[in-house]
Structures are given as structure tokens and as C-alpha cells.
Length: 115
Figure 1 (tube, rainbow, N blue to C red):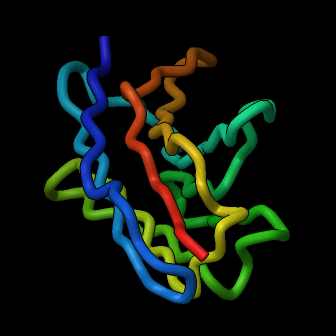
Figure 2: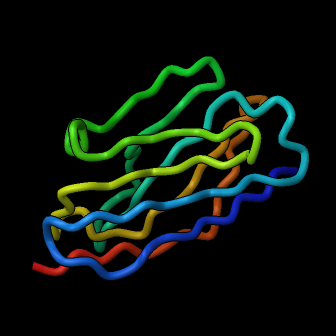
């Protein structure tokens, strides 16, 4: 089992920045990708950014150039640096880990961007 705990959400004004953190624990050996998803009000959950164990990253078009995903393997933690936030980024952000074709999820952290 893999446990994921997110932190760093909150309320920020448009144009501001936030950094989300996700700490993984449990049987973390074999995790091949970690990433962030989000679900806005009335919207389906969508991929924001992902990072593989090999170092490849992938971003949603809507966040390219504004968000950066990074991993600290020594701390088993993945980060999402979010800059130039807009009200459209308001959502619950979920950390995701993929291991042996199974998805693990954190509990989610709320990000609210005011205009």
C-alpha cells in the first residue's frame, strides 16, 4: 500500500503563487510515476502534471509555463509549484502515484484563487 498526504493548498489572489507538497509513505518501492490532478466545481478530474521515475514530465496545456512539478526522491515527496494563478485554477488538487498499474490517491487539498 502507498499512502499520500498533500499539503500547501489555500486561498490566494489571482497572479499569486502556491506550492503543493505530497509525501508518499508505505510500500513506495516500485512507484513509477507521481503527479497531480485537479477537480474544479462541476468538472471532471483532470491531469495537471506528472513525473516519471525516469525524469520525464508532462503538463496540461492550461498550466504549461506556469506550473512546475518536481520530485525529491530522498524525501519521497513530489511538489507542484504554481505561479501566475488564475480563478480557473480553483479546484481540489489530488496527488497521484502509479505502481504496478494501480493508482493511489491523496485526500486532496483545496486551492482557491480569488479575482
